[in-house]
Image 1 (spheres, one colour):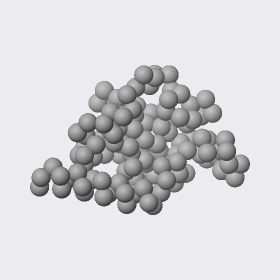
Image 2 (cartoon, rainbow, N blue to C red; image 1 turned 180 degrees about the vertical axis):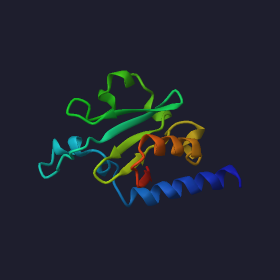
Image 3 (cartoon, rainbow, N blue to C red; image 1 turned 90 degrees about the vertical axis):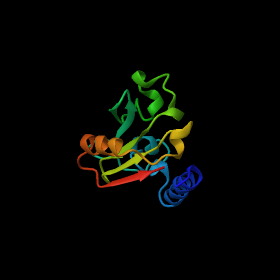
Image 4 (cartoon, helix red, strand yellow; image 1 turned 135 degrees about the horizontal axis):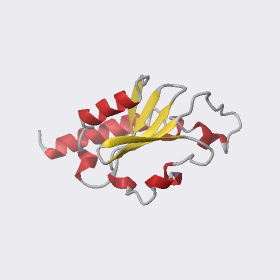
Length: 130
């Protein structure tokens, strides 16, 4: 399969996913509750995650860290070049945003990354790629 066909498959998959669930519906309860009082904050925290130096680094979603950019140890991160996402403890759904720059944006998600995520979030029932 040539690179163009592979890239088109990845783009088609993203378009199908984007039409089903908005990114902010997965693990953004505290973030969304700032604007929508009907959002219930789960008993167990949601998590933000980032692939950092070959491992999955996680941070619970709190009032102070309701967005990736608010996590001090992640400041200065080049987000467009990293795999990142969120985990919803309520729905047991994990979001995955692949790099948006470079060749990686056209590749399928490596199995090793999916395996690391399953180990980090063993209760995960659904993975959504954005």
